[in-house]
Length: 264
Ligand code: SAH
Image 1 (spheres, rainbow, N blue to C red):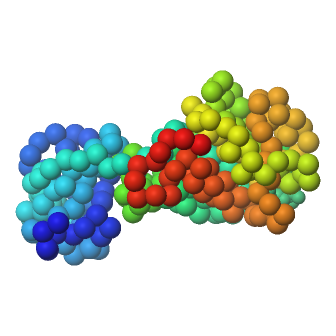
Image 2: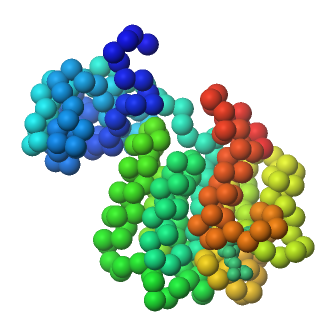
C-alpha cells in the first residue's frame, strides 16, 4: 500500500443510500457531512469508504468538506470478505434495561447476520424497551455503527421484538438451531458443533435473565432446537449469546485472516 493512504484498519466507513454511489462525483450531506467535517475534521484529499449494504465498498476521496455538504470522487470498488459462510442468527431473550444495545453492537462485530429480540415469559416486564418505532431505529443505528467500525459491507438485520412462537417459525430443515441451557444433562456446545456438517444457517437462542421457562423449552425442542451447555458457570444473558456466536464463528473458521473455510 502506498504510504499516506489510510489502511483498512483506520479507514472511516459510512453506510449511505445506494443512490449516492451511482456517479463518479458524489455529494454527501446530512449526518455524514456533519461527521466528516465537524467530528472527524477531515480535509480535502482525505479518503473514506462508502457502503450501501450491497456488499460493495467504494473508496472515495474528499474534494470539498463542509458541515452541510461534502463532495467526493469515487476511486475504486472492492468487495470486503467479512461475512460468515452461512447466516448466523441470534434470537436474544429480551433483557432488561439497555443490555440489548450491547448485544446488538457486539453481535454485529462477531458476524451475526440477523438479531431478533425475543419476548420471553420471564423478560423483565418493567424494563421492556420503549414502545414504538423509536427503538427499532435506535437498534438499527447501533448495528450500522458497529458494522462501519468492524468493516462489514452488509448490515445485520434487526427485527422488532417477536414471540418465541413466531421465532421458531423461521426454522428450515437444513438449519442448526441451538439453545443455551443450564440443565446438567445437555451436551457441551463443542461436541454438538463437532458432530455437525455445514448447516444452511445457524440459529442461536438465549433466554433472558430468568432463563426460558419449561413451556418455552418444550416449544424450542418441538422446533428441533438442540439444547447445549456453555460450561459449568452461569453466564449472564448478554454474555451467553455473544459466547455462542463466538464459538460458532470459530467452528465455521471465522477466527482467521483468510475467508472462512466453510466447514463445521
Ligand atoms: N437464572 C437463570 C439463568 C439464566 S442465564 C436460570 O437459572 O435458568 C440466561 C440465559 O443464558 C439462559 O437462559 C441460557 O440460554 C444462557 N446461559 C447462561 N449460562 C449458560 C451456560 N452455562 N450454558 C448454557 N446456556 C447458558
